[in-house]
Image (cartoon, rainbow over all chains, first blue to last red; front, side):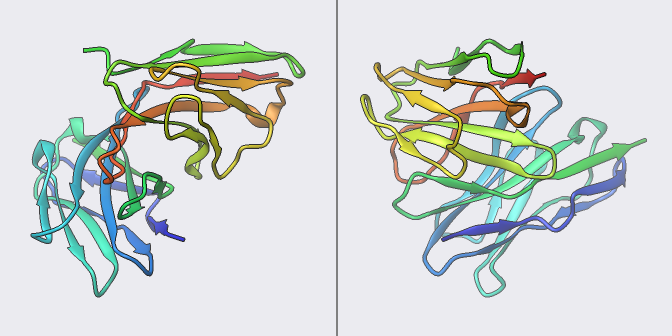
Length: 113
Length: 113
């Protein structure tokens, strides 16, 4: 079975600073990887996804993530964050050909001026 | 664009009461899911459905029942609510394209006193 680990429950950062949110997964089979963002009092929306091909994936709002198969990681990065990026970010994995996503416990990004 | 709609958005129940959460999607998706979100635990799958008339158990199904009588609707029922079921519930759907990408509703906050 797949599992996802987000080691950082909270990441404080100043506005315009770079940020990396870490995600590691475990699976013995091929997977699809996702990052979702949840703004306060809202549902989750897709930020980006890795299905196949280039290991560097670009998403909305200037975020990008890199799939590293050898390290089983899918870290999320942004070179310069804004106050509006304050949200909770969830990494998720699905086994290729299956429909169920497994979510990590989430990382709360707190951007301050 | 409605997407995935959940009703009600807020509800307070007393222990032992019953209620039903309704999820409706207008994207003609085959797959629908109910998750619960609790602090520090991420999203956990309660039940899911791979098509009209079908349901299956997820990670935390105890105390909940579901029905998918129509393709566009997925109902989550609590027969006898318990304080441990205080949570935010999210419905999601996916189109069955094998990637597992989910589209979420805005959530339903349930408090059981």
